[in-house]
Every structure is written in C-alpha cells, then in structure tokens.
Amino acid sequence: MRIGIYPGSFDPITIGHLDIIRRSAKQVDKLIIGVLNNSKKTPVFTSEERKKMIEEATKDIVNVSVECFDGLLVNFAKLKNANIIFRGLRAVSDFEYELQIAQLNRSLNDKVDTFFLATSVEYAYLSSSSVREIARYKGDISSMVPAEVLEMVEEKFESIYNG
Ligand code: ADP
Image (tube, rainbow, N blue to C red; front, side, top):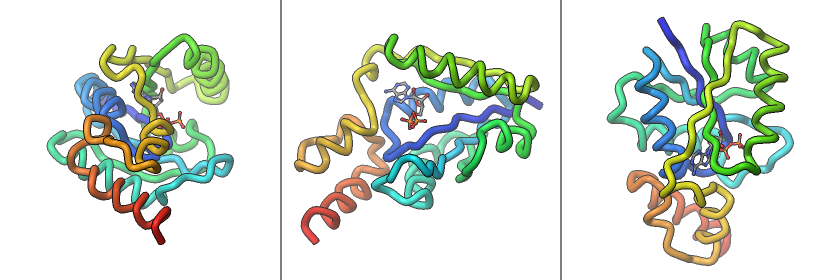
C-alpha cells in the first residue's frame, strides 16, 4: 500500500493546494494531508479550522484524509507508515528551501522520499499569504480558495478586523 503525506500550513487552503492534492492522490492508495501546527508561525486559522476547511474542500476525493500534526514531519510519516512526501513547487524561489528540507528529511529517515509536483501555471502566483492579505482588505478571493471554504475565510477576516 502506497501512503503519501502532503504537509503544509494551509492557512488557508487555496485552489493551488487543491490542485496538488488531486494530482498527488492519483499517485498513491492513500493520501494524508498533514496540517502543521508550526511553532514558528502564528496562523490566522487554528489547526482545527484549517483541517475542517480542507475536509470540506476534498470531500469528493475518496482516498484523502486530513490530520493535524506537530513536531518533525519524518516522525509523522513514520507513525502513518507513509513512504512519500508530496510538495508543490511554484517558482525557483521555492526550490532552494524545498531541496534542503527534502535532503534533511531523507537523512533523518531514508524510507521516505519527497516527490515534487510542478504547480499548474494558472496557480503559480497563488499563496496563502496573498489570500490573507487580499481578504484582510476585503478584496475578491473567490477565484483563489475552494468554493466550499470561501464563507469561512471571509467570516474569519470579518471577525478579526471588525470585532
Ligand atoms: P508551508 O508553510 O509548509 O510552505 P503552505 O501551506 O504554504 O505550507 O504550502 C504547502 C505546500 O503547497 C508547499 O509544498 C507549497 O510549495 C505548496 N503550494 C503552495 N501554494 C501552491 C500553489 N499555488 N501551487 C502549487 N503548490 C503550492
């Protein structure tokens, strides 16, 4: 059984992430989306909110499940018996960081390999941080996040900036 993990912050999930999820899910029997509780970043959405949004957006993909994790990715992979980590590459600027992490992870656990998927060109400019920035100033994010989560994202920013 091939088990893959697609880790990330997903703060919030974008249609760029969803594209990588759909393509990764085709390559494995089971895909676990790992929502990172990152101690270095202060996310806008709690990990439970991020998990819920991903579940909503992926409910039609049968072999996908969503779990929160913290600590080392390779330990989470081991716990889940996963042998593939999927990451998306948007631009050369992603590459240097991603290569280093992939090599580091492999040195920690050589049973896990990282597979990179090149972003679909139409999503290359998309990032969670730009979605947050646009939503904060009430810009239109409807073409950037999955339809199922649009309301949740807008409500969150409404509650943060309008009390
Ligand atoms: P992290 O904080 O770990 O970078 P993100 O949620 O920002 O988490 O991204 C998770 C993964 O999704 C990363 O591999 C990132 O390169 C990839 N990714 C983010 N946005 C896109 C996009 N628009 N197209 C393809 N991959 C993307």
